[in-house]
Length: 145
Image (cartoon, rainbow, N blue to C red; front, side, top):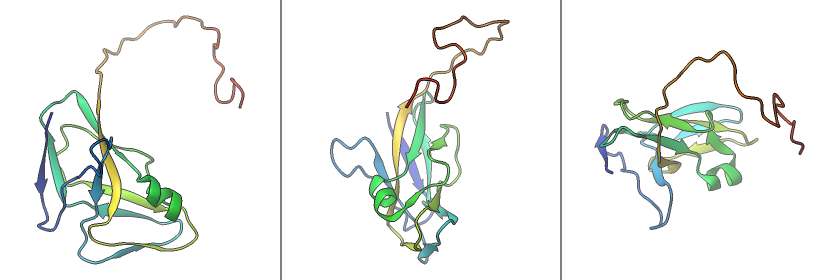
């Protein structure tokens, strides 16, 4: 599998895995000037990239970087981003500041990580009923803490 990236900004950086065994490839901010994200604020950060995967049976998932989240309170506003394989626009990440202090994003800063995952395309079928299970309709919290 290959992911073909096009730089839409000359200073954009291609995704890179930090180590040979890293599941995700780091995505870097592509900024002309630094952007400060204030507490409680969400800012769309451009990556300066477009992508064309060479397969359609996958999804490109964008996750927060654990260090940025745990040390600075900077995470993705949408928890996990999903890039469909037929999307051809520029990539952005919605960074949200859950901390109590402003945080500044600089050009080239690693702001998220990309993981490719397989996708199954099930046939959607309407039915008049579903089988009973031991759990039944027990929802949130029904199995305890």
